[in-house]
Image 1 (tube, rainbow, N blue to C red):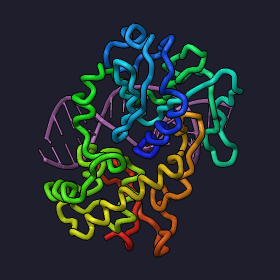
Image 2: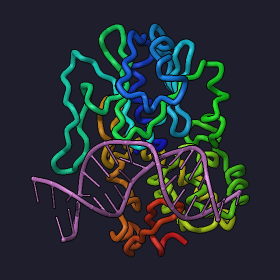
Image 3: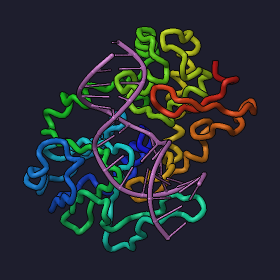
Image 4: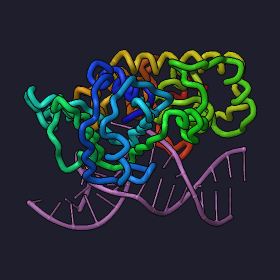
Length: 292
DNA sequence: ACCTCGACCTGGGCGC
DNA sequence: TGCGCCCAGGTCGAGG
């Protein structure tokens, strides 16, 4: 689920509800995703603090509080949603035809591991079926120096993602270009879906050694990365199964994917059946004709 | 520096 | 209906 466009979609959808709200109570039902500090400290540290603003870097959502920064990584199935108890819940329903989660706001269920309850009765709920997500709380002054954030390469949407350093970085490695793009230190925010989409748009084979890309190819890739991520944000993210935004709504980018998950189907450009193989330990789809 | 593998988790889909 | 197997948007660490 959550690559840059999905995390950005969550950030934007929570923006009208979370900043300005003060945490009255912290409820932790399963502390597995809390990596720092010890989960037992969360209530004491968070209760009484107000959220100020929401940020994002790569796949990390950054919820700023008065004295702390809460770093949330959604892993594979993490959902951060706002709930107003005066409005009707829809629970987690599966659409009979598309199979997509249709939820809007949800009450606490077996997978809702953490709830931050506000003074007015509303709450921010964290739900994560596979529990691959990670929560880390840092004092504001330590946030920028956190290993999670310092390890990230440029963010293609909000950051300084320039062609020359990108090109220099790719030239230094003989790894498959797909592996390099999945490396969050090279560029922050790409995952399996958007990497395949960007490589297709750029006309680059996923297995091509990064250092062997031509100048033109690197330029096209640099543009394609920004394009696929922006398109993903515009569509409200890609919902294959679990992704929902902060209000519980599914995204629509899955309808626009050109290669991811479409192996065997005709390429949208040339009609050749799309290939599938494992590259960089991930299932990969591409067009052997359009991508060379 | 890079690769591969396994681990962390749960659930859906499919074949039998 | 049920069981077993494979798969899944992400990382991380061990070992070669």
